[in-house]
Image (cartoon, rainbow, N blue to C red; front, side, top):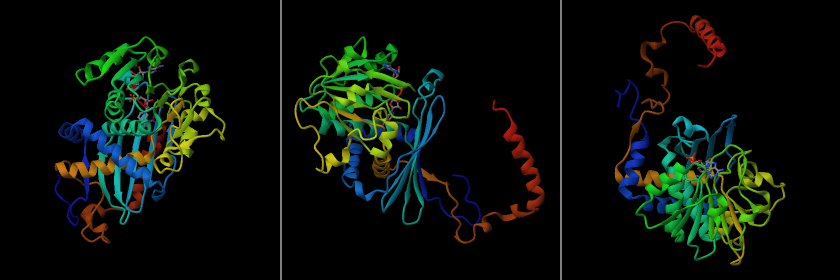
Length: 374
Ligand SMILES: NC(=O)c1ccc[n+]([C@@H]2O[C@H](COP(=O)([O-])OP(=O)(O)OC[C@H]3O[C@@H](n4cnc5c(N)ncnc54)[C@H](O)[C@@H]3O)[C@@H](O)[C@H]2O)c1
C-alpha cells in the first residue's frame, strides 16, 4: 500500500483481482463455487420484490457492447461492468471481461471491488443450471453444447452436477475450441462426442445449450432441432441484433426469461412481437407460475444475464473471500479523517490560480478532442 496521505484514514474497500479469484476457485473447487453461487442466486430470486431493478445500460458499437448492470436492495448496491466483443478472441482478448462492485446502501461506501470475468462464467452456468432444474425434463442425461469457448466448460460442469448430465454432444464452428474443451474436461466423468454441426449435436439431446458468440442475427437452433420434451438453454443471444434461435423455435416453446424489460430488448425474444408470452423465472421459483408442465413441453430459457445474478455472485464472493482471508484494502475513494475537510488532504497543491490553469487545460482538452485516435 502507498503511504496514507496526511489527513486521510484507512481504505474501506476490499480489492479482489484476477489472481485472487483464481486462488479462491482453486482452494474451494469449481463445483463448490458453482453450487454456492447457484444457491445465492436462488435465494436472491426468491426475494425478487426486495430489489430495485432496471434493464442494463448498454453502449453499442459495430463490433461489440459495453454494459453497466446495477441493482440494489435495502442493504447493498451492486453493479457489474461487462463487455461483449465476439471478434476479440482473434486478437488474443476474451469476448467477455468484467469487474464489479458492492456498496453499503446505508452510507454509499464501496465495500468490494472485484474482477468478475471468471465469476461471470460461474454465475452464468449456475443460472442456466438452476433454470434447467425447473424447466428441463427430469432424468435429462444428454446435453448438446454448441459454442465451446470461454463459458462452455462452466456450463458443462454446472449441468453435470446440478442436472445429472453425463453426455455432452459438442459443436463449435472452430474445431480447436471443441478440442480445448475436450482436453479441459478429460477425466471429469463426462462422455464427450464431437459433432459435425449444431443439428448433429442436438440429435438425441435432452437439453440444448447454445453459448456462441457472433454479433449477428444467427439461427444456431432451427425448427428441425425441435423435439418433444427438449429444453433449450440459450445463452449467447444477449444483445440487440445478436440472436441464436429461429423465431419458430420460440413459437413452439414455453419461454422463460430473467427480467422481462431487459430480455425484450436483448434476448432471442427481441425477434418476437411485444405481446409474445414469456414468464419471468423468479415466478416459477416463487410458485406463482408453472415451470415444465408435461414431459412433452418444449422449454426455452432465453438467458441474457441479469444484474441480480451478479449481485448474488458478489455477495457470495465477499463472504467466501473473507473466510479465506483473500484480498487487500484498496484506496478507491478518499477517506479524510475529518469528513468535512476534503480540502485539508491537499496540502500545498492549492498554490496558484484556477484562471491561468484553466486556459492551459482548455487548450489541452481541445487538442485532445481533435486528435486522431492511434
Ligand atoms: N446470458 C448470459 O448471462 C451470458 C453471460 C456470459 C456470456 N454470454 C454470451 O455467451 C456467448 C459466449 O461467450 P464466451 O465467453 O464463451 O465467448 P467465446 O468467444 O469465448 O466463445 C464463443 C464460441 O462460439 C463459437 N461460435 C461462434 N459462432 C458459432 C456458430 N455459428 N456455431 C457454432 N459455434 C459458434 C466460437 O467459435 C467460439 O468458440 C457470448 O455471446 C456472450 O455474450 C452470455
